[in-house]
Length: 60
Image 1 (cartoon, helix red, strand yellow):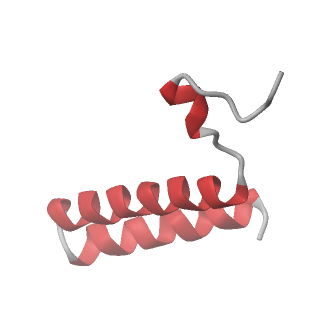
Image 2 (cartoon, helix red, strand yellow):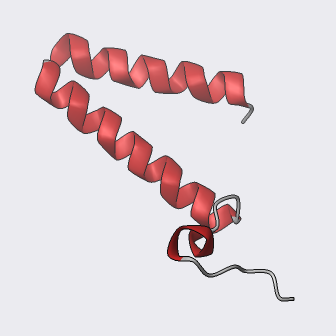
């Protein structure tokens, strides 16, 4: 799925949560969506946690 389609789906889900659930549910969906994105990026290897902890994944 390309970035445009993913953005559209995310917007629709957040809109659905805001329309039928209220602000609290909107925030819950937004936070869980961001957490899911973070986990997916970690699994794909696009985010290196070693950079945050001071360790690098590349060896010298």
